[in-house]
Amino acid sequence: MVIKFLDLHKINERFRVEFDKKVKEVLDSGWYIHGKQDELFEKHFAEFCGVKHCIGCANGLDALNLIIKGFGFKEGDEIIVPANTYIASILAISENGCTPILVEPDINTYNINPDLIEEKITKNTKAIMVVHLYGQAVRMDKIWQVAKKHGLKIIEDSAQAHGAVYKGKKTGSLGDASGFSFYPGKNLGCLGDGGCVTINDDELAARIRAIANYGSDRKYHHIYKGINSRLDEFQAAFLDVKLSCLNEDNSRRREISKFYRENIKNPKIILPKVYDENAHVWHIFAVRTPKRDEFQKYLADNGIQTIIHYPTPPHKQDAYKEWNELSYPITEEIHNTVLSLPISPVITDEEAARVVEVINEY
Ligand SMILES: *Cc1c(COP(=O)(O)O)cnc(C)c1O
Image (cartoon, rainbow, N blue to C red; front, side):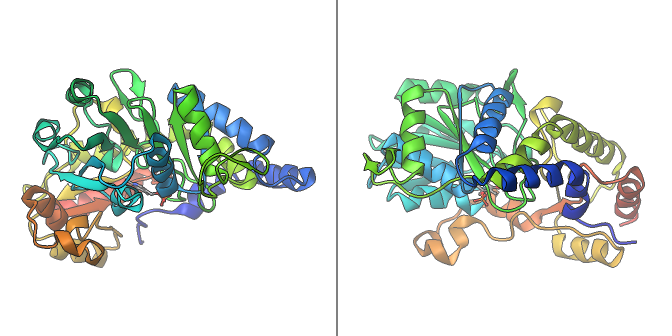
């Protein structure tokens, strides 16, 4: 028996009948972009996050890019971002000519260390981008405080944390604007690429909506040098179907996570820590161990697929040669030791038990 890291076919098979209906509906409508499906999903996802506006776009990277463009940040502006993140968070900043200022994570949460932010603020700092990594909402208290004190915007990268809750509020509503990805493997994923921006401010929402559609506020009338980034009707329709199951799916992920945390008892394995069960939606269940590559091979030999999120930190990538000599020891420690175990809403109790058994025998 092979336990897949993520069985996307099984995840989506649950919705086949409803997907078929939606495909027919969109085909019958003859309308493929910015139509009824998009409008409906945006309304439902805004409600889900507890914000006024949701703007569909082409992917998660575009969502972050659109937010930075919407604020009008440009060359020379600095944006604080965790050193320990998927490269997209940082690319969105560079893409706009802004300077990413890397901050080390907290080794316990893997998220940005709020205590290290203030010392990085200069007269050029414009925003703090938080990343709810692996599905765990960043502890925002200190970040709210620092942002307020220095007049900074807060941008959320919520690509891994659909539905995570911090102090009663969902990700997507914890900052000034938030970017989501609906890449197939995310907790809410479509059957292709998709993303969105969530936002409360009416004016900023209108600006971002225009920028995402060639900078036009109405057809052939261009008020910004925009981009083309839209969520198509098929993807919006699929997402709306799956959104109704997101809370349930996240609960199942929490159940598996709890089972792993209570039953994996191997001193060589460092389990993830949670400060509040509601704050985590377990997009990724990441453990750490010193001999990570050996451990990964052991699991593979025993039929358990795993993935490393991520093998190389952004500052060690060729794309950021200017940073290659810099040292972010906590970030590097995480990248060298981390391994993601199978977790998803469709993992069976038997599979989870097998994962535990194999790890405890390591
Ligand atoms: C997936 C992801 C993105 C990018 O989303 P895409 O839809 O692939 O562009 C951004 N940030 C984080 C943290 C992600 O995990």
